[in-house]
Length: 610
Image 1: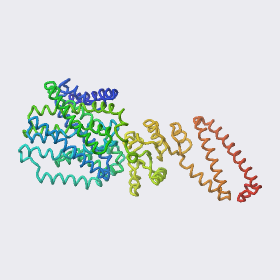
Image 2 (image 1 turned 90 degrees about the horizontal axis):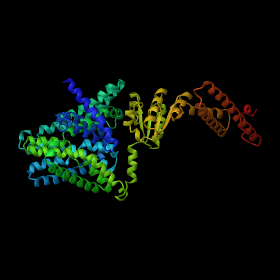
Image 3 (image 1 turned 45 degrees about the horizontal axis):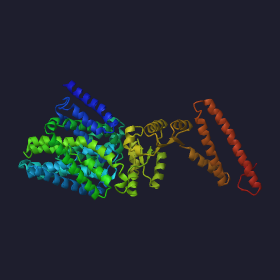
Image 4 (image 1 turned 60 degrees about the vertical axis):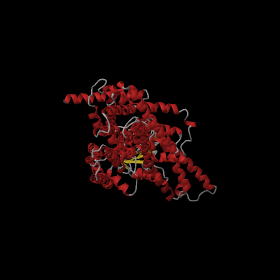
């Protein structure tokens, strides 16, 4: 038994490692690769796995984690702004699509109760595949991506009353929704919404102080799975619970750290979910009734696509965006499998029609990634003629959502940079590895997040691919060097401005094409200028002397950088530079004396005139 489980894990991982890179290589996307791997491993090809439902139930945790990560991207205030889109566009899509598909099922001799349940189930789209496709095509923040997400969110809400209505429509009254069920569900929602934010922030604050990454990972998984379990126990969708937990933590200082911990688990389990969906495709039913299944898939895709395009146009989208909205959500959803099973259990659906519908939904899910790629290629050349481009204010909103500056280290150095950017209203992401500093600065209204900037997963979670300027302001030189090296490897085209402890540290940063800023150099020059003015030198003259010294020293820093591994050469360069500097200021002093004889500044002290 142990060997069988180990073999299953190895085969699933091997299939993913082989299929996904191949499909990505040909531009077909990771989702289609997972689905194809599932079909091959399923009971109808290699028959390596006979019970796909068992794997599908376990892999639904990936969908739960996906919704949690999506929730982390949405603050409560932003979710409130989306309420009209969610309950407007989402409700319109579900009602109209369910009505049209239910009417077609009535024509196919379904009873009205069965047509209502099945039509509503078919109106729902796959949250996992839809969001994954939007993420792969970098479309989550486009106009059709935002509307698509709002529709998917409403569909998750609709799933709850739909499951509650199935026993009632089937005549099993003792299994219908009661006031006790409603009270339990509302109570669970109230507990999560009212107590979730303070409890979770306190929990992660305590865990962060332990400085043990494995405990933080365990805490993040506990929060995701715990809220999902609580909602499921209350009769609600576990994905909804995870989504709410993510929303409550969206404004938390631990947001990026949590996302970086959850992301690997989410990716693996979501891939396993797609493999399980591929296994559930009944090739025998498709082979037995190819015409019926093909017509069913065609009708489902055509109806949903057409209605979604109309909804997109009604939302004043360009035609291209409306077409892309249809291509993302025209597929069936994984929740339909649950509805079909429940409908069959209460005699609202026969076994033959159950198998047909499962095959239709599964095939639509498998075809959608391929059809989306084809449609995207088809409409791309015509995009300029399909409608106006997005307005400039939308572009500004997108930039605001994705800051282009990241400050790593919010000590005395990074805080000054952050204050200046805040004064200019330039958005930025700030990371700090000390939880105490994070807590103190947040108390004064600063927006920063807990996390170690030397970890690639955390930089990705913080939106590193959107960052144009990285400010490395950590106090420890070695940490700074590791972070700069990581940024240079992951984001080679970004500009890196780094805090340098001394000249040696600056040279190492320059080796990685980072621009060093010596932490005491600027303030030392300022106090030097003040010393000169205190001795009676004119302010303009003192400022000019400091400016020339800065230029000289920066040239010296670059010259020494070329030979800094040769101590003798560095010393020789320093001696030559010192002599040049003396000659430079001696020449300046001679010029200044000439000016005094001609009636120049009388403020030069006697010692200097001598």
